[in-house]
Amino acid sequence: MNVVIGTAGHIDHGKTALVKALTGVDADRLPEEKQRGITIDIGFAELDLGDVHVSFVDVPGHERFVKNMLAGASGIDIVMLIVAADEGVMPQTREHFNICRLLGIRHGIVVITKSDLADEEMLDLVRLDVAELVEGSFLQDAKVVTTSSTKSAGLEELRSSIRKVAASLYRPEESRYALLPIDRSFSVKGHGAVVTGTLQHGTIGVDSAVELLPNRIPVRVRNIQSHGRSSDKATAGRRVALNLGGIDHSAIERGMVLAEKGVFEPTQVIDAEIELLADAPRPLRSRQRVRVHIGTAELLGRVTVLNDIGEIAPGETDLVQLRLESPTVAIHGTRVIFRSYSPQETIAGGRVLEPFATRHRRKSLTAVRSFLSSLADPTISDLDLTYALVTRAGVIGIAAAELTARTGLLRSVLDPDIKGLIANATIVNVGSRFLSTGAFESLRRKLVAAVKRHHELDPLSKGVGKELLRGTLPNDTFAAALESLIASGTLAGAGETVSLAERKQSLNPAEETAKKALSHGLQSAGLGVPKITDLLDAASRESRLPTPHVRKVFQTLIDSREVVKVTDDFFFDKKTIDSLIAKVRANAGEDRTIDVAKFKEISGVSRKYAIPLLEYFDREKITIRTGDKRVIR
Image (cartoon, rainbow, N blue to C red; front, side):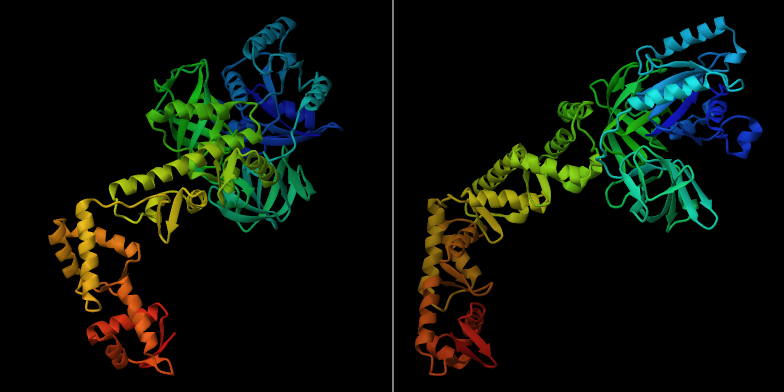
C-alpha cells in the first residue's frame, strides 16, 4: 500500500531530523536550508515498511514559510503532528494542526520528539498540552509516540503505528480524471523539465495527453518516476515525478496543475463552505481580501459571505463566494484554506462546492443557500451530485463536459448515472445538454405563454419569430422544447414563426372593412393591380385605420394565401393568378414555349406587369427560362 505522510509542527521541533532517522534521507535539499539549519521549502523522502510504502513530505515550521507548508500539505493521507518535548505546543504547532484539520485530513499520529531533552514530568505536561490541542478533532484518539532522533528511541513504535494507521485508510475506486497540483519544477540534464506533486485523482501514464492549467499548455509525459523508480503509470495518492516534453521548466510554476487534456476549466469565481477558526482575530466579512490556498497555489481574492448579515463569526461555519484575482483549477470537494491578507495568519478553511459560480442576487439567496447546502452534505453520492447540478442549471441546462469540469468525474462513471436519471424520467436529454424534468416542463410552459402573449399584443401577426422566442436559450434546449410542443399539438411551426396550434384569427369591424377593401381592390384590378402603397392608402381611408395597421391586415391575406406577392410593389389576388396560369398553359404552342411578347398577348398586360409576373412564374417553377424564352411546365 502506498501512503503519503506529511509532517506538521513548529520550527526546530525536529521534523526533518525525525524523517532522516526513519528514512536515512535528509529532506533539506536547499543550500540555504543547510546553512541556516531550518527547513524553508518542502522536502521529500521515502520509507519502505514491506506491506506499506511511505512517501514523506517534510514541511517548514517557520511562520514565514507557512505557504510552503500548505503546498506540501496538499494531498497527504496521514499527518505526523510533531511536538518537541522541551517546548511543547507552540504557535506554529497550532497553525499547522488547524491547517491539517481544515484540509480534511482524517488520519494522523502525534509524535513527541527530543525526548532526551526532557524529564518524565515535562513529558507528561507536553502530553497534556497536546491532548488539549487535539480534543474533539480527528487526532483526539490518535496514537502518541515519544521519540528521540539522536538516540533512535521510539522509532520502531512509530513505524508500527504508521503501519496500523495506513491499514485503516480507505481509498474508494478511482472515479475522477487525473489532477496533479505541482509543488516543484526543475530541469534534469539530458531530460528537460521535471515536475513533482501528489496525484490527487485519476491515473497518468507515459505518453498521456495532458495539459498545464490554468494556462492550457499541452505537454507530453515522457517518463514517470516515484522515488527514483520508473513506472508506466502513476495512480492517485502517489508522490510522483514526471518528465514533461514540449515545455521548458522555467515556464512551470508551483501552483499550476497538470491534468487530463480538455477536461478541466480554469475558474475565478467559487462557492464554498468555510469554517472560521475559533481563535480568528475577527469575523470574516464580505469584501474582505484574503490569501487563498488551493492545491499548491497561493492566490488573492475577495470574499462575499452568503448570509443576511454578511459575516461569519469565529468558530462558525457558513457559505461564501470567493472571487479570485487570478484563475485556478478546482472541482467539487477541493479543499481551500484562507489566510488573512496582513498579517498573514491562517483564519479559515473548507471545501469548494460550486467551482463555476455566478454572482448571486440577494433576492435569490435562499435558493442559493439551499442548493449549496445540498452540495455540502459530506455523504452526497456522485449520482446525487450530478442531479443537483443538472437541477441548478434550470432551463439553460448543462452539458456533460460542464458536469465533468465541475466534478472531475470520469465519463465511464458520469454517463451511466445520466442514463439512469433519464430512464427514471428525472432529467431530460435535449441533444448536447441535460435539464431536470421539472425545468423542461417549466420551459415548455414559458414558451407557450410567450407565444400566447405575442398573439395578445399583436392579434394580426402570423406568429412569433423563432429566434425572438429562443432568446438566450441554447439551440439544443430550445429546439427540443419547441419540437415537443409542436408534436403534442400545442404549438404550430410554420417556417421561421411559431403560433398557437388552435389559434383562430379574429378581426374587429374596422379590420374586416379594411380586409374587404384590400380584397376588392385586388380582385377588381385583375392583372392591372395598383402599387401596394396606393392599395393600402385606399383601404386606410375606407376603414379609418392607420396605414401601418392596414398593412398588418394585408399580411393576414398573404399568410392565408388569398394574396400572392410577386414583388415588393405588386400583389395579386390568388384566384386571378390561378386563372392566368391556366390561360397561359391553355394557349401554349406545341413546343410549350413562350416569350415576353406572347405572354403580353395572352395576359393582356403591359411590360410593366409582364416581366415581374414571368419572373414570379420562374421562381414558382411554373416556367423554366431558356435564353429569351420560357418552357411552360
